[in-house]
Image (cartoon, rainbow, N blue to C red; front, side):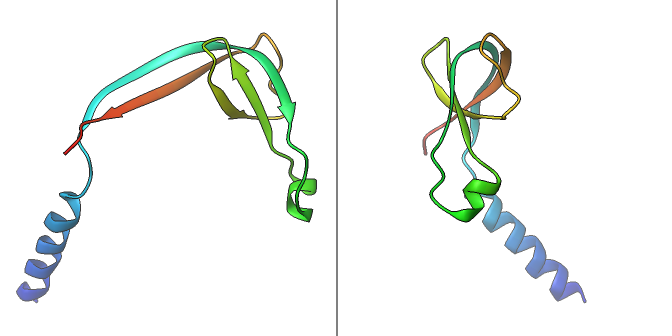
Length: 83
C-alpha cells in the first residue's frame, strides 16, 4: 500500500510541474458596445445560438443572449510567466 502512495505522490509532483506560474491577475469592468448572434452552422447551434460582444476596450468576447448594449461586465485577465 505504501508503494501506491509513493507512486501517487510522484505522479502529483511530476504533473504539477507542467502548470505555468501565474504572474498577475487583473479583474476589470468593461461596457458592451456592440453585440451580435453568429449564423448557425449546425443543428446544435440553431438550438443554442452563440453570441459575441465587443467591449469598450476593443476586445471581442463570447456573451450570453441576455447581454445588452451598455451593460457592464467583469473579466478576469490572468498573465502567466513564461518558462
